[in-house]
Length: 213
Length: 233
Image: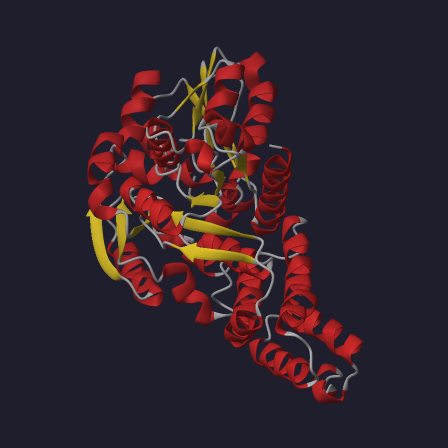
């Protein structure tokens, strides 16, 4: 895994399917490192991983069709395919697609919610709806996923149009990494937001993968 | 020095100036748009004509290219900023000269949601199309919508949401309107990135609008139907 770059995960995804496992986890590329870490820690050796490009995060309308294509491609080689996406901005269309394909997916609106734990995240919604979230992956890929696609590299004056209603950046840390903490704090400063680091670990992602295994 | 930098707007004839303003709007050139608006007004153009021919027509090109994936959000925002600057000059003049009024819309982002870029674009394009727009801002509870509807008596209620978690609140508002027997008094339009046609139908909205240009066209269609119904009853 160490030789897989975030850029590769963002643009091309990752295919570690062997057709030998019993379960295939079909995930967002932004979750690849986390899923491999859970797999290693829990000895889920019968579980294979394949990831779609993480940059679908920027184009959620592409996710249902891409998931369908991947499920169709791999379904003859696995007993179970589990989709490691939450709704992720598809407005319920991914859930409908998974229902149609007969595969399960992660409950909840997005990774910020399941990393924190869907129930906990929902309870905090009334107090934290002015917060902007980053995960480990998004801190590392802040420029590629936030700054540049929003045009802030070319037009920094647009910042307040995007973020003027936000108050705080919450870095949901999956791992303890002081370098990422410092980078996340810098991201908050660049967006003109207050900063909070919150260790979440893998949250519901870990629970659900162990349950599916 | 580039060819563009040699263009002196005040020396262009009207038709070329309007085309240049479309280009400047496309490129998000706020100061050039302000200058163009002043020039056209100085040449005796009616404010409404400047709005529709130079600004709205230019922004429509931006909207189409956004829909076709040629332009992206940052460029649309820059164009919107330029159009907003032009409208800022025209708005008081439009009020004085009695521009045609197509209808009235109350628009707001739903409770728990602070995203307003799409809503602001819709509001601006609706104003450009001759609608009076009452913008309720962000994070609106159902009570806020009800109050605005009763106070403003609009033809259209527009609701916006960017989040999967907040879009169901649109149904709360519509269900409340149904409970109070007010639903049929308004055209309800909904929009926002995670929404789709199916969701719009499921919650009982009149239409889902995928972007600002669609919102304007849809609003005009519903207003025309409303007027036709009025004429036959």
